Image (cartoon, rainbow, N blue to C red; front, side, top):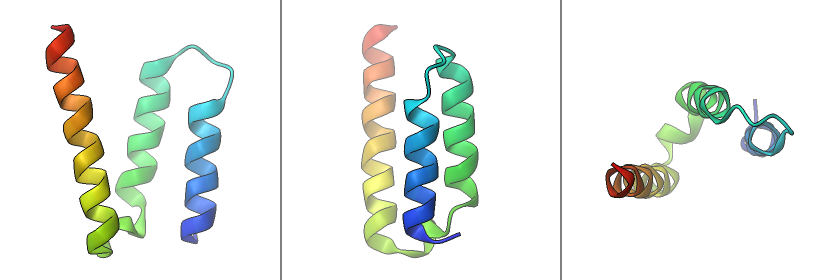
Length: 62
């Protein structure tokens, strides 16, 4: 799968009508884990920053 297709697929996953956010997150993280994004240091850094933001936001809600 190309990077463009992976982005479209991930965007579709996140933009569907369902309110089941846990399912969306699980699907998105599964696709992310299978993605070739990890071989690109710039993209990996972006993902690391986003995950850090998610973790930070989660700790603020607890």
